[in-house]
Length: 291
Image 1 (cartoon, rainbow, N blue to C red):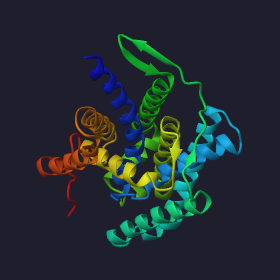
Image 2: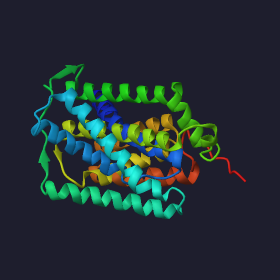
Image 3: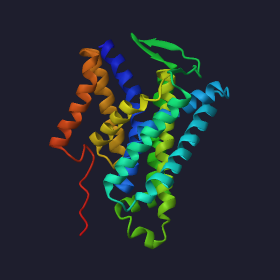
Image 4: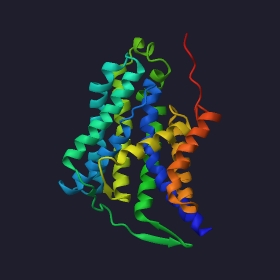
């Protein structure tokens, strides 16, 4: 029982990181019905921003987190403005190829300046406590608590603010809503800023939990976060959260009770099975076809 509780705690930590990344996928899809395949690499850029802020600038944790979130958000807005906006009315495959190209560019651009894995210094004093045989560290508490706060904050922004109302309206009909005075480009830029800032926060947390980072770290983690978004129901914010914690739990439990090499196999199998029996995800709903 103690071992199971320990693994559940680990699953919460991993699921929290997946959730922050998955929200970027689901927000962009909800508004543009486009998969931003460069999103996993923006998570990687967040980890390197954390590394630079901690080493080159010597910033403590909170300023490092804020600088990283703002920096990645600005990068996300620039990518939307110069890479995705010109293709908004182009065939969807053009946007997909562009997103893949942006991801490859970010990987190789980072590789020029960091050809070897980098070690991120610990920004907080990590203490460990043991309760009933279950060990919990201050870093785990920080990652889980901060992720929950950010998830609640994003959910509140989307559901209770004018910007969030505009996001939901545009996701319903981005042709009619601008005719009512809603600034389409501004809201889409705000969506990218919010989604990518959360990816930056996830990059900071991952860099602290697993302090060796490299330019290709965002590929597999980005795909897994995308799986989490699809499992929960892509386009649904709460669904992305649910899918992330499910995927985190599945991965940790597989690694705990089976050979760890099965972890990725089970994750991708989960996606395939879900798409067969519930193609819209756990909380997702089919989009109405406008004619």
